[in-house]
Length: 133
Image (cartoon, rainbow, N blue to C red; front, side):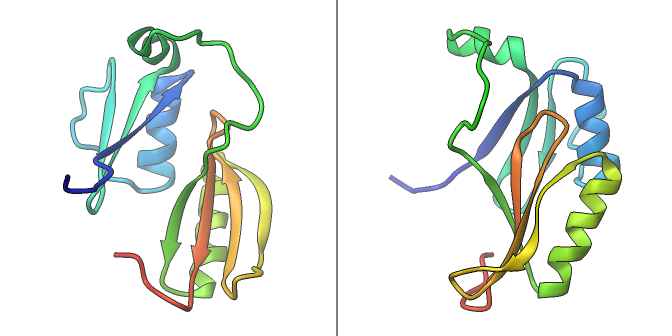
């Protein structure tokens, strides 16, 4: 097996709103402007997909109902400590909710969390011990 994560798909309640948040607010590159049923954002090594929540649940064969902490967070590592604060601010201006202000971490880095318009949790982190890329 060649280990990799190719696509992360988020089930969203309002596809146009989510496309606007990720494209216009956070500056991700939209792969195709035809986003009537699904949207893809190409990143380095991994794609982010936005798919209507009900359609995703139907595809998987599970109930769309669910709430609370899902046990999953997404992370974006940045090059500097200052970049953490900057990206958290960009996300909030774009419509995210600040969940945890950036702060020093127990592992020696610096990070904070925001929730996107559907409540998906994103950690913005600076890790002085290694660079993920």
